[in-house]
Every structure is written in C-alpha cells, then in structure tokens.
Length: 374
Image (tube, rainbow, N blue to C red; front, side, top):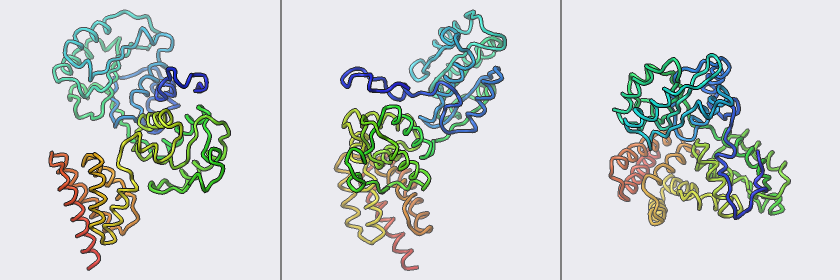
C-alpha cells in the first residue's frame, strides 16, 4: 500500500476505495462464507456462472475482480470483459459487445475460461436478460458470466437457474473499523492524542454509537500505536464514519477520504459536515425528550432538523437506528420500532411531509404514556 506522502496535496490523488481495493480473494473483509466459496473456486480453477447479490459496498465487485485476477493471472486484460449494466443495459449490448467477446479466441491454460463481469445486472432490461440467457448457453464451453446485483429477484429465473448464487451482507462495525485502521496506518495517520496533546481534549468517550467493547478497545489500542503526523483524527471521528457508512465499506472509505481532504482533521463535526446526515446526537435528544415527556422539545428538535433541509427519509432512517441502539425498556423499543416502521412505509409511499414526522413523535409519546400507566 503506497503512502499518500508521495502525492502532492493539490495534485491528483487516487481514491482510497481504488487505492486499497483488495487484489486477492483472501484479503476481502467480511462475508466469510461467501469469501470461502470464492476461495474454493480460485483454488480449483473451475468457475461456474455466478450471481453475487447484496447491498452496495459489501465487496461484490471487488470479489469477482480478485477472483478473475487469481484465475487468469497475466491473461486478465484480454480474457475479461467488464461492463456496468446500469449504463450498458440494452439488448444491443448483449448482441454486440458481449456476443463478440464470447466469440473471441483467447489462449488460456486448461480449465480456464474467459470471464464477463456485469456490474449492477439487476438494472438490465428484461429483453437484454433474455438475450443474455441464450448467449450463456451457446458459449458455455469458453465463457463464464459473473453478475453483481443488489437484488437477485430482479434477475430473471432462467438466468438464476444457470448461476451459483453468492449472497453478501452488510459489514459489521468491527470489520469496517479494522479496514479503516489498515488504511489509516498505510496513510501514516496521527491520533488526536498526539494532535491535541492530552486525552481530555481529544474527547475519546464513545457517545452516540454503541460499538461493542472489543471494537472500542481495538480503536483505543490502535490510537496508542500511531506516531506519524499526516492524518489527524479522534476516535469519535472514526466512530462517526462507521455510523454514517451503515455497513457500506465503500461509503466508509469515501467519507474518511472526503473528511480528511476537506478539513485535514477527522472528528465527529467534520464527518457529519461532509456526509450531511442528521447528527445522531440531535436525533438521540429527540428520543430522550419523548421518553421524558417533553413532547414540545422533541417537536422543536425535529423542526430544527427539518429546517436544515434534511428529507423525512434521512431523519426517519437515523431515528430508527438510534431507537434500535437506545437503552430503554424492551417493550418500549419494540413499539417505537413498529411505529417508526409504519411511518417510514408511509413516507416511502410519497407522503413525506413534516406532518408525518410530527405524527410519529406523537405516537411515540402515546406509547410511552401507555407503558407508564401500565
């Protein structure tokens, strides 16, 4: 991993997502079951047609690129065709680009095949998918297909039946933190304990996101190891990045780099300026006011967030995550999550008004009063 010290501050800088993209299947973070299946394929050399399904930023594209590199080695450039199906998704692409590549003669070691990678394949039109099905059959002896998508149900059944399905899930906080540590170490970071000089000024208390003890200890242990002075940060800055990423490694690395590039210091305030999401502490105060019977204060906090331009979806998504981690009675938490889910459904149906959010707070207050009376 190259250090950023070699590049000018004002010059071109490679996005960290690309700079630190794993090149081997074994180096991919998280989704151990999926990675182990791909490692078996890399070891045996006989790759089937694949569908890699899961949320964005969980390693689907990286996994198939790493697998292709391991299988084909120096023949990668001439034996791999990469297409983003969200751009090239019409039937003409299947009839022209994909078919021409499948017909191309490439000398490969025994047991190896050309690989066609279709990213965001769930955005392909139905006609293109039907044409692709026939192409997969005709050239099955020389070409393998790898389709990455967010939702496998949007891939037609005939293609699904011809592929092995590998599912990816969102990464855990610990997995994202571990990768952020690797990136920070490679970029020669400095912790805020060195930047500020003492622990109280650095403010290392984990506040709004309940990382588990192991994760917190890893963060502080790494904090004590850092000595070089390039990327200053405080633990809450990394905590905020993990919170905003929500299991998306790509989002985490982009937010980390954007915060450093914009402010030269990674802390909570700067991270939320870059990400432009409702601050979890403000949302947490709303929940606390509801639980304490201060409904007017809760509505005032909501109005403040709404006036800042955050959409109802932004607010309610953060609210749900705060409720899920909030320390409250189990019955209250279940009822709060149920009411929040119903409100989210109405907002997704297009009724995304300030009135819906106020109505949600009112229902949460009623739930709290009912539980108190019982």
